[in-house]
Length: 428
Image 1 (spheres, one colour):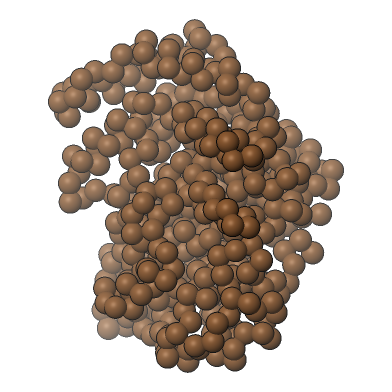
Image 2: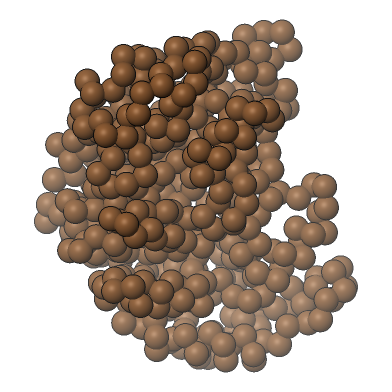
């Protein structure tokens, strides 16, 4: 049985939650391997809608064990709040596992995140202000706080004091903010320890054993390929690796154990936050996509920037992730356009470029080269097979598949669980 990675092939918000939930009934473990509560998934189960920020989408699937891996940064208050909200709605959250090596987001991380972003002014990155970046920075600087530190008060106190020695200098002298009391931080963190303890585990050992036993393990990326700190549109990126390689480091599973890598593609393109976006629309079409698609960030509440499908980005995602399949979402949103533009290349300084430029400067100056594809007006939400789609919708999907470099194995034709066309099984 396979181990699969499921990730966003654009800038995030492609509908990973729906895809994960679709597979959840056949999957034994669903693992978040990076990011924190700056990510968001909307999952519709029957007439119920769930907005998940930190928890793996598999927590909504009975029989599935949801896992927060070592590569995730965890805000304990958010974790407990999200668990409480699901419990109140009758969702069983008792199977959740949290890596003892995952790093904790503390109140001083969110403070630093917010004041830094304000200080940058027009040069701001567009972070969510939830302390994600500063927490990863502390991790790399080896002054981070891990989940396991909650169970040794002496070590926890030493680490918090060490982290605040420098941060308080910055807060007071650069940002004119009051210094943070280390003892209060320690007290607050210790207050979460017993509530979180039942979930804490050696998740790397558990996941490797599960794969060796033939269990199905699904690794779920929190953001999209173009937000990867190494392979995205730097510096307008997240602080971790949502690309496929991040699943290995963020969950402690070797690359030889991964069988398939599935990229989630929206039938058009969206982005939240600052940074270049070649196909972005500022006209009625952009507003129409935003309205019909319900394009508002699950976590941020911000309107998403909208644009036409970008095949250059899709090809790039195929390359850097080693994608074996695509899940195409929100095809239904495009119903009603007479013609649908698709970006097949860029024009940069008068030259046609068909691959994503590595230069930040070139990408900022990239202009989309469009190919027009015929649209359709028929309602596709009831389609159960590929042949049920209108001919022009079929042609659109086939064109995107050819341009993107990997087979489209499933298509979302509506927001509900059942509104999906499965062409090839991801579990075969």
